[in-house]
Image (tube, rainbow, N blue to C red; front, side):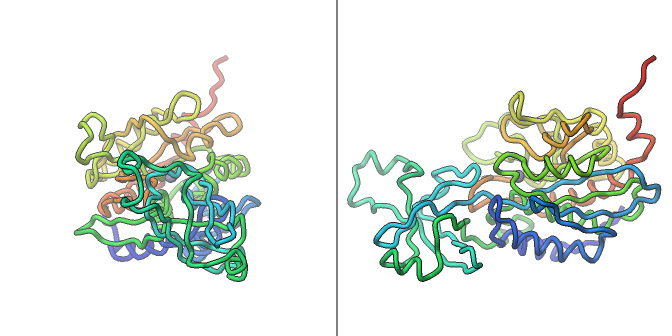
Length: 369
Ligand SMILES: [Zn+2]
């Protein structure tokens, strides 16, 4: 199978998505980009009450529903307090590791859409105890300096308690196919979904591509989207951990960059994770092998994706995940390999085109007697 997508086109889409400001619950600017992309290719397009974007492409033998899901939101910060001297205090949105905040630049977005730059300052090494130098501060100790000198000045800029912030970092090429940026989790999954949805030509089932909200704060958007769509089969597109760097033993790498998209077998811990439907895992492996797409198997110790809640929708949905290996997840320096992205697009397209009514009904409730 030939992939007619220039690498530059995928990079530029990913850059627009990754550079947008869209923490959980405030995905508006990402949603606009998604709608712009989907408008050209979807047969139906809607935004639901929570803010999920649902795009539908009619199948050649419609009736069944394949749901693809990728989340629009990123981790971020709330402005929780503005002090008399104009410094902002913050609280996390989603899983923000304290150490990812040290000396960062952030973008603050006000409720009327203004964007300001801020820095997360810390006491210089000269004035702290040597043992403090080796410690990561607690969330409540961090503050953001936006250059203002008083609370009045902050308020006159339009910044209020409840406004949001994200890392200030533009997607950039390291070398070759390796790129780095913020919010690659999960704007890369979004890029894979948008591009594969665009190139799907002859799927039997109707394909529902859903750009979800509030994944980082508990898979919330996917839960209501699955309820309203009632998919027959589902695939989430998200990042997974690639710890193939110094200091991590080989058995803990999970995946490696550039070795192909990962086919998830399981993730999370007991109640909160996913055990992918074994027939979907088999079908993804078969599809990858028949199409000559490199892939790796993924058994992830922690974390999960939208597929976990979609699988539990109503009477149950056979669900799986195609993952894009990513280093340094939930930081401003996430790193991926564009080859994995292009191959994930190919695999998603091939899976959608291979999914038949017959196969899907073989996965569903059967009467025994
Ligand atoms: Zn994610």
